[in-house]
Image 1 (spheres, rainbow, N blue to C red):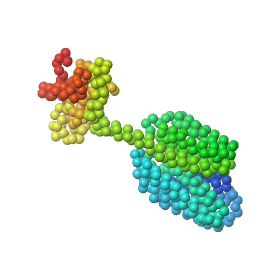
Image 2: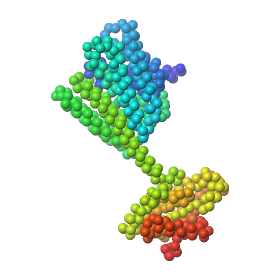
Image 3: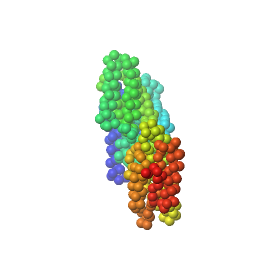
Image 4: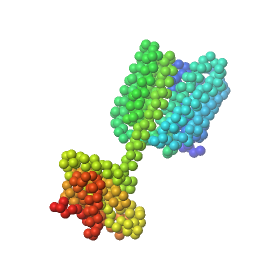
Length: 472
């Protein structure tokens, strides 16, 4: 193990101890806190590093036992502290190490469109492992069922560990990944919503959520009312607001900060009677956020799939059926307002010979270059589609056939000037034009444009054809 690896593991130990001290700082009663961040950090380290994290986590647990003895001045001997610390460390590392490694495979397969199953596995794993840890901890470290407050201690330990893992694992993954980069894990957290708000708006949402939380806790403490404390569950609503308008990493940060401030406030006020309510609320809000996180990602994926289904992969032109649907819509609009609309149909001259002589990759390069040129010569309101093979369509709304002829000529001339990776490769196109608004539908307009295209082919290719009467 080199010096760099030793320093990174040392940093893991220090981070674990800082988090442990933070949990002690936010205790509302001895050994009782809303959450236990070190559990989340341990789970994350085993999730990312597998059993390589064992030494660092074991040492941190042992050191925390000694630190705890100093904080509470319990007078235990060094030997007793080492035994107790080793027992806690072994139990803590085994439970969360095994559970994190079992979860590792399914977490790796997270993506935008299959979040539900991995999220459910994550939640069940966290709930089960923290329950095993709390029960075993009380059984082996605190005297078991003979302990006077066995049930209450086990429950507080369970919910505290579970809160620390649920709330903080996504944030800790980002931190630990900086020390031990591992691509692919939790790629869903890289998802960016299309309309993610500016940071100032995100900060405003955080402040609004915190204000509601502080108000509920203060009122519940003032009136000593568990009913008012239950209003904390309504913090799910602003958290859902953040989930649906921000990126998952911002959601994770907001959840972590909300939980920390809640734990800090409960500690400052010395709240005890409503503490369980707040612990459960953190877990419920976190679970709701994880499930809701998949909804905007799923919507974004569906939007992308919808675009892909309507767009040609090679040329990025509109697919035939979608082009026809858009043309029919424009035709109705043109007839209603008396606008002229023109249709251009064109293909690559002797495209089969290009494929036969230069290969299909060269043919693909021709189609891509042609498509890029066309998009550079048309308006944003024009619709560029691929009919199939080397045949393309161009709908020009509010365009007379004379102007359409000019557009076709500009494109045709530009295509002849294109250069490709094959020096001897030269390309030309033939065009046919029809007035869409004068036809009964797309098919009639297409037939007319196709006749004109065939006419251009017969008359020598590399030209634009339309009915003479129309051109006049």
